[in-house]
Amino acid sequence: MELSFKHQLGLVCVIMLFPALCFCQEYTKSRATFYGTSDGYGTPTGACGFGEYGRAMNWYDGRVAGVSDLWRNGAGCGTCYQVRCLVPELCDTNGAYLVATDQGYGDRTDFVMSPRAFLKLGRDEYSSEELKKYGTVDIEYKRVPCTYTGNVLFHIKETSTNPGYFALVILNVNGIHDVTAVELYQMGQWKSLNRNYGAVFDFPNPPSGEIRLRFRVSGMSDWVDPMIVIPSNWQPGNTYATKVQLK
Image 1: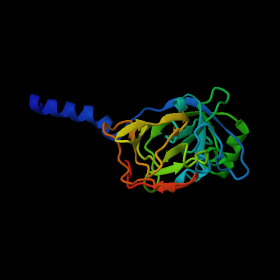
Image 2: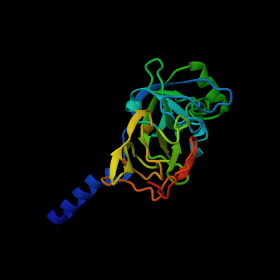
Image 3: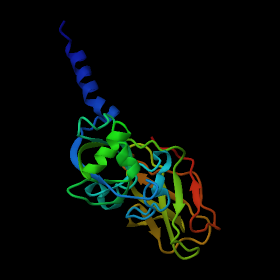
Image 4: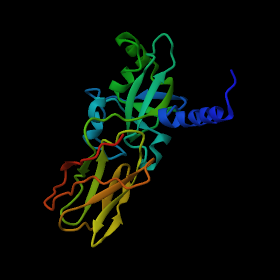
C-alpha cells in the first residue's frame, strides 16, 4: 500500500524526531582500568571538587570514575555513562552505570573506575575478579541520563569564608545536562561566577546578606531558578536543597 505525500512527510518528521526523544547515542570503543580504595568507593579528592559526595554520588553507591577527555575542563563532572567491557565470556551485557567525578588517565583509557564500578562489568563475582587480572580492558561506552534521587543541591565548598569568598558545587543534575554557567544576584543585577576548577564555581566578594543564585545547563534555553535563597548565616560545608529536579 502506497502512502500519500502527506503521510510520507509525517513519517519522515517522526523518524527525525525520534532520536531526540530517546537519546539514541551510539557506543564508542575505548579502554578502562581501575584504581584501588580501601572500601571500593570513590575518592573524596579529585579534579571535579565534589569532596565526600564524590565517594558515592547519591544512589550510584560508589560507582564512579575518573575520565580523560570526557572531563572537558570540568564540564563533564557529574555526567553519567553506561560502560560495557568486551570480553564475551566474562562481561555483563548491561555493564556499569557510573558517574564521572574526577579526571584520570591510564593506558589509552577513557575511564579509570572505582573498584565498585569496575566489578559491575563482570557477569558474576568470579568474572569480575578475572577482569581485575586484566588490569585494563577493552570497553564500549555511551553517555546516558543521570538518575540521581532528590532535588538539585547547592553545596558550599569548605574553602569558602563568610564574608569574603563564596564557592559552591551544584549536585544532583539529572538528565543529559552540563552546568555551563552560574550567576549571583548583587546590587540589582546578575553577576557571573567563575568556574574555578572542575565543577566548582566561585565569587570573590559575595553580598553580605542572603545569596540568590541561578544556573544554566546545556539543552535548556532559559536559566534555571532554584526557588530558594542561601541565608546570610551560611557556613562553609553547608548544603541546601533547591526546589528544582531536572529531567
